[in-house]
Length: 156
Image (cartoon, rainbow, N blue to C red):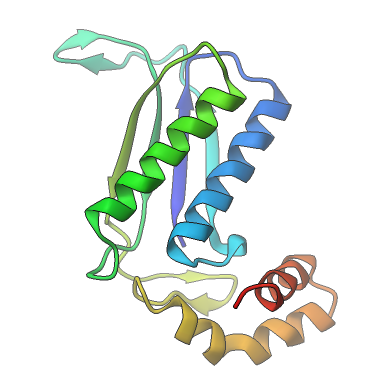
């Protein structure tokens, strides 16, 4: 559902990329109750790109998040995610700066893994509505849906 774009100028190891993807997934999933299966992350080296701030070339590490926005998601929710992302970055890539975290409430509808995505704040009802489909796909051997079923069996 959400799509996180990590643009980095700092050389990252594959392990650091994996850790960042895991951290972003966990942070978003915990804050907004989104199943981990539906948190998408792309990590791109932009060290050779020309980027600008205030009309001057400026290279930086940054995260853009394209999310479903709605009345259930407050400024303090986004602030909490921003702070958690910065903390994760500082832990995983110490000694470097994460210059920007930017949220775009641009996702109004869509489909992922054959399912129409719910509006922001309606994940719990959507999960209940689609639970049988999740279990069916897990039972058919889909590892992603096995993980999703296990994830939600552990949640209240």
